[in-house]
Amino acid sequence: MKCIRVNASRQYNIEIQHGALAIAGEETLKATHAIGKTLIVSDENVFPLYGETVAESLRATGYGVHTFVFKGGEDTKSIKTYEAIIAALSENRFTRSDVLVALGGGIVGDVGGFAAATYQRGIKLVQLPTTLLADVDSSVGGKTAVNLPTGKNQLGCFYQPSLVLCDTDALNTLPEAEYKNGCGEIIKYAVLAGGELFSMIENADIRTQYADVIARCVTIKRDIVGEDEFDTGRRRLLNLGHTFGHAIEKCSGYSIPHGAAVGIGLAMMCRAAHKRGYCASDVPEKVEKLLAKYGMSDAADFTAQELYNAALSDKKIAGGSVSLVIPEKIGCCHVLTVSCGDMLGWLKDGGAR
Ligand code: MG
Image 1 (spheres, rainbow, N blue to C red):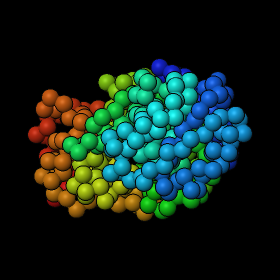
Image 2 (tube, rainbow, N blue to C red):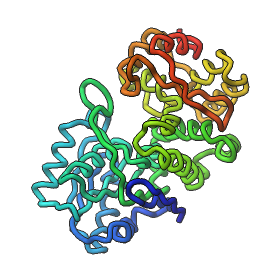
Image 3 (tube, rainbow, N blue to C red):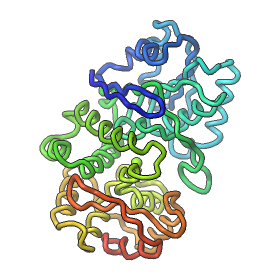
Image 4 (cartoon, helix red, strand yellow):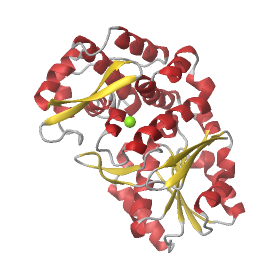
């Protein structure tokens, strides 16, 4: 088992192992030191595959098991789903010594995490991510949220879990599109950190080295989040590819998934940074080549103006300025604050029409 210790406002382990879901009960007990009730929150895709394995392991350890299964998908990451989870906790008389177990991808983790963070001012949370994207990104760092009609992640808070348990076997059932979704964030981490992670995923397929790649990505994220848990400084580096990526997602009506949009946003940012003299031409070239290796595109068919309008509603844009994460070389990025108006030029330099 690979184990990464996180020292945030709560200390917890990220454990990576094949077959980990079958020992979810004992690992939950070790992490929470409490036997009580559990609510497994999951979606209709994941629960039929792994729900019973997790429930059985929890029961065998002595936990009471309740379940909350919802449809899943971006439009169910809503106040309505959140309210229904809170109702399930309340009706089953959960207390602060009980545990919410989020079993699934990023959406399950985000809405389940937000319910755990707020029910009775916070109950214990265990994250069991089952997608590559959730493994490397959304289950680490304590961000929880639901969407509002006005935008993604508009209502949420920082809340650290007691445990994150990644079962690499769960990735065997991942649809191709979900695999690519994870690859987008992994390529982002490779550009941020460079070094061995970049050459690992350049030289061999991510699929053949899940545990190593996940461990490296969460270590990078842990180190950045550790310096800036509440996202006021260094953590903004994790937004590499995301400012343009979010705009691309939004322009596509969310038909381009998050990781794919981040990949495109990353390539655009590398091209723009090169054009403006921040980095050498090998940076966009290497990134485009890596995206192609994983069957991902490096451009989207939206105009700079369309992307600009979509980006203006991003929550990261404050006071007429926007923080862009600029690659100088593979393994070295920095945050540059530009005025909102300048972003149109950056998008054009990135290759938008
Ligand atoms: Mg992301």
